[in-house]
Length: 114
Length: 117
Image (cartoon, rainbow over all chains, first blue to last red; front, side, top):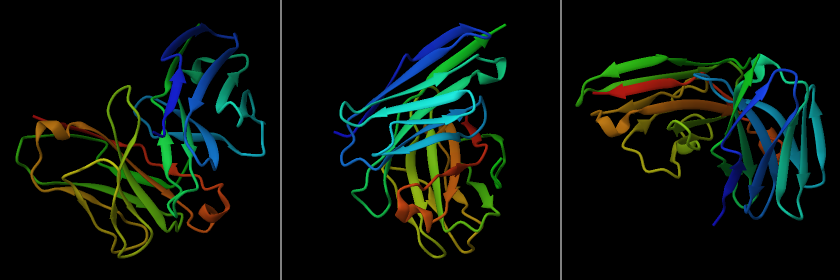
């Protein structure tokens, strides 16, 4: 069964600290993996996208890594800010259909405190 | 910010009412999607469209229906709302051309939070 599991479910950190969010997937075949940020009451916004051949990608203070062999990804946030408080969703796409089906994790709810 | 809009943002209605959730995008994207998301849970695809006059059911069984008469517009309709329909509904779109290159990105609207009493 194709699944995407994220951990931790929730995380609280102090402003300025770093954190790392985890994503494990069993989706096969694999096309790409995305990290989205979803602010409360808003739709998800894409942060990074990685294909099979990429093992790291950065977007400002966000750095995503991908290990396609172990089917694991992480999202590292550096020098956190209050505006980083949001749900971070890992999304994996297969290439088994013309739709390029997406499998969504439940997200990690990050809260940054001052 | 993506140019994709949803109205209303919040809706509280009684059981049995017919409602239409609006979604429009100005990016000229061919592919559009409707997702349902409950708090703390993953997004579930309920409908999608490849283009005008194309609509398909998604993974999650839904009593809603959709139409795609114009590229920019993808409304979702519930003929008779029930409390079990209470959820957040997210509309998204993507460029069908890019989707063949495995780097397709979906752009999401702000969502409609629906409460059926």
